[in-house]
Length: 265
Length: 166
Ligand SMILES: Cc1cc2nc3c(=O)[nH]c(=O)nc-3n(C[C@H](O)[C@H](O)[C@H](O)COP(=O)(O)OP(=O)(O)OC[C@H]3O[C@@H](n4cnc5c(N)ncnc54)[C@H](O)[C@@H]3O)c2cc1C
Ligand code: FES
Ligand code: FES
Image (cartoon, rainbow over all chains, first blue to last red):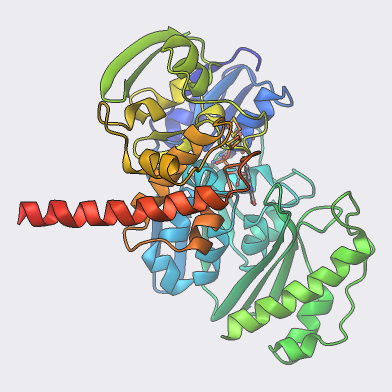
């Protein structure tokens, strides 16, 4: 790792000032950034640690509205009793990220800022129609995720929270790579007052996306049987050492069926 | 450079370290606590697991300055003098190690797992929660056996203590 200067921020305002130092980067759980610095894929001059900022932590549920602080860990999301009642699918998703040690440190804000094409949270936030709140503005999930490792965030902009309205039904199914534990395909389905939305991670050439074919079939009848014979096109899907685009296309339909069954259970 | 100040295994320690120093290197090189191992470069193997403020984390994926102000327990801090911690004793009893390289991380992860499941553990849960700890030797069977046994011993111990307190 190259030399770096560490700063611990006490508040969002403090972090916003500190991040103006040199070529600074925000540090949350460090579960992506520290490995990237170790391999010198990232070489910030300064690190601004967000993990002790109280106002960025915790989960609020009021009625159907859920707000999650950006520095809330995967562990805390997976164990939150209010969230487990209001949107159990999201708590379940958090419990599938990495391993216990990764979940203790990694955060929702870090995960979506990174926007790894195989990360889990982007699928959930896109399907839930979530809002990403920063220290500058509010961005809807469909405008926030912009392809591989790209987001709408400007330099130094800090995600402070995400919020969404819990849908009537939702579920997430993930086909994991057994070594990395990331999704080869992950499908989040949600059925709310604005209809059905289905978001897919792990598969898209350009990152997380919504599957029009599956949404159309489920809009008629929200049942796994509606997906019999639905073909997801392999065009624009990833092919790599783990799976071909055709394999992923098939897997999307399989995971979607399982997710709908789970959501209806 | 920053001043890193920690409680390690119950003792207050402090020292200057470069900001880029990983917690695992601070423990091994500055404090001489070489029980915590480094087995990979990718945050995947778990050989480096220690407890920071009561949570099992990968000390290779955390800077020492990030931990400053926290309380750290390493494998060296588990035993009570010559008495092994119940998880250590169970690994010995059930032959939960061969070369021993993964063992400190396994034991620290296992202790955390048992603490998180006071209701008890079953084999499927142990296997699922060991995802972040890789062993090249044992094939895991005896590690799983050891953790299940330790979880039972610790539950009994906790009941015994509750009785004493009553
Ligand atoms: C072994 C292993 C397995 C994993 N498995 C999975 C998995 O199965 N699924 C999955 O989804 N992820 C997985 N991850 C990644 C994990 O979820 C990370 O926690 C996550 O990608 C990054 O979150 P973080 O809090 O650690 O962020 P950091 O590593 O601290 O930061 C990541 C990036 O986000 C930026 N950032 C952080 N916080 C903010 C903020 N509030 N506002 C703006 N920018 C910010 C940082 O500057 C940096 O560029 C795995 C990681 C490891 C090490
Ligand atoms: S050395 Fe830390 S996870 Fe491998
Ligand atoms: S005992 Fe050798 S790596 Fe586990």
